[in-house]
Image (cartoon, rainbow, N blue to C red; front, side, top):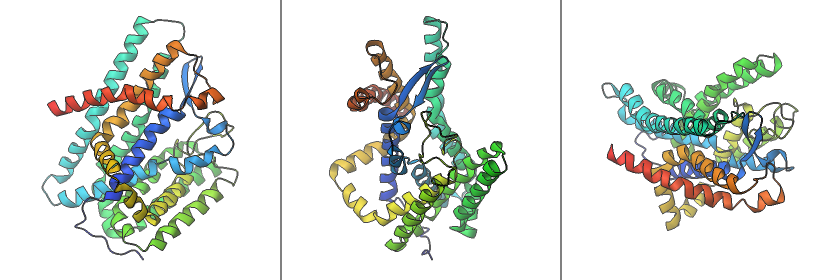
Length: 364
C-alpha cells in the first residue's frame, strides 16, 4: 500500500532532473541516430536499430517519452492543487499552458513552412521533396498535441485521482490492453489512436501519484522494475509486438510500438519508473555535482525551445553537410565514426536559434 500523498508538496529535484535528462536524450537521439534515406518522394527518417542485432535493447532505456509525461503530470498536479479553488482556475490554467506551449510551436511552424516555401520557389525541380522535409522537421510536435489534450482535461484527471488514486493509471493500462486486443485480435486498426490518450494518460497520471511513490519503500521500486522488465520480455517475445520501443523502416516489423503507442510502452513506463525509484538516492547524489546542477538549471529554462528547434538545427547542419559530402544512408563504419560530429554540428546550429527565441520571449 502506498503512503498518502503530501498535498503541500512542491518541486521535486528528481522530477526536474528526469525532465532535463529526458529532453537531452530525445534531442541527442534525433541528432545522433537519425538516418535520412532519400526516396522518390523525399527524405525518410530511419535509425540503426534494424541494422544492428540487439541494438533494440538500447530503446528500453533511451525511449524516455513515458518519463516526459510522468514529469508533466507531476507539474500539472502541483500547479492545479494550488489553483483549483480560485474563480476561473481552469480557463486560466489552460490559457497559461496554451500560451507557453502553443505560441512557440506556432512560431516554429511559421518559420519552417516559410523556409520550405522559399526553398521550393527558389529551387523548383521534378522531385517535390520539400513537403516531406517540412513534415520531418515538424514531426516532434505530435507530443505537444497529446500533451495539450491532457492539459485541457486536468480537472478530470485531478478528480479521478482524488477519488481513486493509483487505481486510475491501472485502469488506463486495462483500457490500453483492450484497445490492443480489438486492434490485433479482431482486426480494427482504427481504434489504435485511442491509445494516444490511454497510454500517455496513464504515464501522465503516474505524476499525480508521485508524492506517494517517492515515499514508498525502495523495494516497491524494485518490484515495479522487475514487473515492467518481465512484461517487456514477455510482450516482445510473443510474436506480435516489436522489441524496439522506437519505429524503424529497416526491419520486417509490421508496425511501431510508438505510433500509436502499444502495451509494451506501458511496460516500459513501469520498468523505467521502478528503475528511477529504486535508484533515487544514487541519482540525486550524482546530480549534486555543480556542473550537473548548472546544466539542469539551464535546461529547465530552455527545455521547450530546445525541444522545438533541435530538428531545425539538425536540418541546417544536414543541409550544409549534404552540400559537400555524400552522407551515408545506412549505418556503415563511416557513419558510426562520424557520430560525434552529429552532436557538435547540430548543437552549434541550434544554439543561435535558442538565443533568438529567448530574446523574443524576453521582449514579450
